[in-house]
Image 1: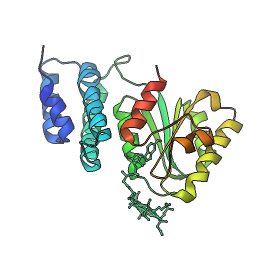
Image 2: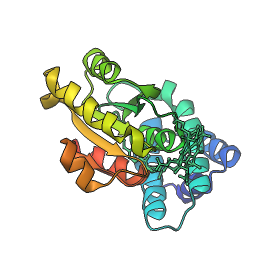
Image 3: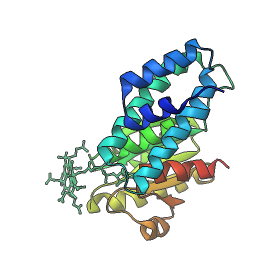
Image 4: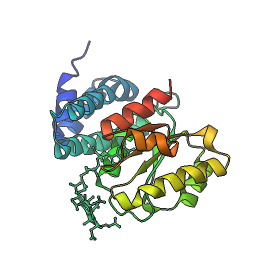
Length: 210
Ligand code: B1M
């Protein structure tokens, strides 16, 4: 049994050069891309998520790990045959209309991508009609709404309402997050869940696929 610990460690450290070198060596030695992704890299990102939640890793460190994961995933992508991909479904994510903050949202995108979801990131300042159109077009199963301003929180409710009115509500789970948002606000506007940080958002999305 190969020792994959150095790969996990370099991922957690966000050391892109070391990680890509070790991944290449493992591939050269015969490890499969699917095994590296599902049994080494994704569990490594779970550790990052846990450390983030417990406060043992800072945001900057989490971003470095997420970037390293992105580079490793890009490297493995062409080698992943059908059925070997860890795709866990499609997630539409965006910062709601009127709000331009995207650092936290990008982190959520990266963590969900690292967890095997196909993430369609709509960007910032996204109106309810754009979320609805994207769910329809992409046949997404999870929608993530981010807001950093108290003034844009009502836009989250408008977005949830628009999804209900479009008839797509039963198809998607809606996750909301961002500094001014909390669980009771999520309940109040009819979202399925609230996540305090990127690790929790990814964990929540994963819980919906079971
Ligand atoms: Co703005 N801003 N900002 N800002 N800004 C805040 C949010 C503010 C709290 C600063 C302050 O006054 N103390 C304040 C909001 C006050 C309020 O509403 N109560 C504020 C304000 C007022 C404004 C402007 C109105 C300022 C002005 O122009 N007068 C303006 C609004 C522009 C607009 O959006 N229309 C504005 C502009 C900006 C910049 C453009 C300069 C810049 C954004 C750059 C960018 O995002 N590309 C900016 C920044 C950087 C901040 C602060 C300083 C940092 C935000 C950040 O990136 N944090 C912020 C103060 C603060 O938060 N300390 C502030 C790091 C990031 C990793 O955390 O985004 O919270 P966060 O994401 C976390 C969680 O919230 C969660 O997970 C992430 C990772 O753990 N999360 C989710 C986020 N989305 C999620 C979605 C999920 C789940 C979890 O599921 C889908």
